[in-house]
Length: 154
Image 1 (cartoon, helix red, strand yellow):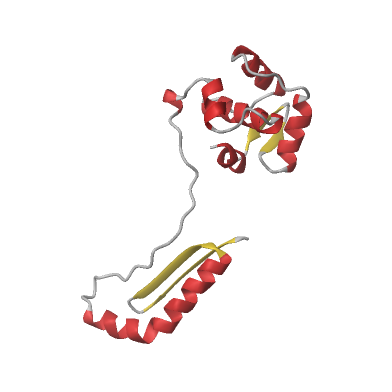
Image 2 (cartoon, one colour):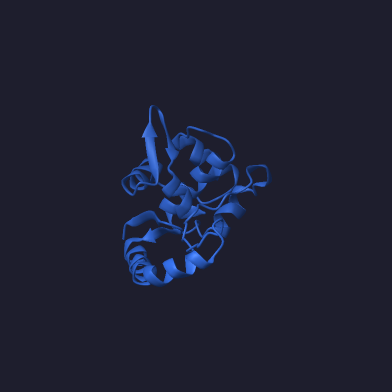
């Protein structure tokens, strides 16, 4: 499902909805049905009062990079040990959280080796799989993890 966002204001009535398209449509229908009663109620409310409708906002969790755990703990907590594609992506996310802007495949394998983790048999293939899923993006001689890739691991 695609995310949808709608915002409108009629007099003192304001509606903001963000989330899955079906959910937003359902909430909009509910508000539209209640406009006559809401308009009557809003006249009773002081002019500076605001009628609010809860909105759903999906955010990517933030991790404090200054307090980042070691690679093996990071991968274990995010269930990124067993599958090579997730281990590759998890390691790339860890490197990026540590401040590395552009990452090379060798840096991922070196980080895994230094953390004494199981090696990835074909790192280039794992990178290409992550690119095809939209989790990584090649740029120049390296790559970076997209927000979707970070969200997949975090």
